[in-house]
Length: 475
Image (cartoon, rainbow, N blue to C red):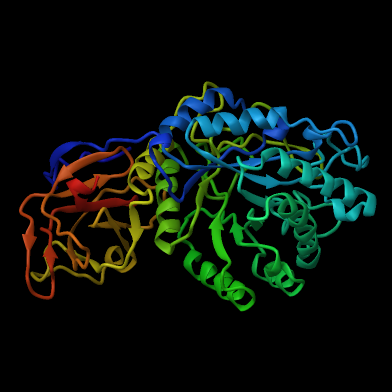
């Protein structure tokens, strides 16, 4: 589902399609994808590399799988991980590691051979030593190829990824220190990321970890803000986390390191309440809003989970039970064909690279009939989300209504009023539909020299997914 705005009430002139870009041709950006769970063989990576090469994302999160690297005590085989890292780099992405999970060699009570979620600090000094030796060997092997190192996954969750002890920030801070020390011994300038904090209790957990000295060992704090509407209480949560971090180390920045949305309503691990109508269209809308929310807040990384549906093997967590498949992929798990969400993210990757910077430039939506009786107190105008960027010197405006992603929303006709403080003026105004990459010329473009630097006519659509206004030369 994506509206054809050259038809009906809007009558915009179709200009063409956004030119997508290969990942190798994009120097850097804040957009990444998840490439986790290969330590448990949950998807086939081979069909994914060509798709990732065309996607335009720059970062790929990988889990290192201690149990798969050390099958005999003291002997390390990183060949499986070498293959992943080298092929991601060849595709134009930069792999970063989530160093995580245990090893049944040292943890015989682990219910699964991957020892998911089994934490070394609960198994005595000898196991901690083995863990540090593994981290040291891992860093030595991948030095020069991997610069970002995250410690563990969703340590604030009990049962799933933190066992056999109960989650608490002090123990996690200890694990971070014990993991960061051998890595930085080999790679002194390694970026250490902590958190990978799942939805739920984050603030109290972070506070405990900071009091235990976490800030002395990390450069970034990552979150996994799973929620049905990406914007729900998001800015507030980020502000509180940021304020807490700044009390201990003002240099620590926040990452969005993992977050996804299923494309089917039932039969998957994320059977969230209220997703009875979820489909590929609504997943694509969710992806676009997730990334725009992260970039609007100014996060250094926005990573989508996952590259592909996780259907090849059972989804294992620390309790050992087989979970249902994870159907959040940009690619279908059966044939690795792209879903609509893939194309939506591909369009965002083409625009939001290092040449696009967050900058506050005033944008306001008004009723198309204003001031002739239009009512701007309508909820549509009260709750619409607007943000602004600068790309190659041109202003770039994003707007949408954060309504239910499952809803088929008829576009509302609005007037958009802008104040441009960017270096360059908009002379060839276009509207971009990020879901399908279609570009429309905006006719009757008004320029005003007074308080409103620019004013667009009242025939622009407002939908529940992001639309972009900018100059054609910016894209």
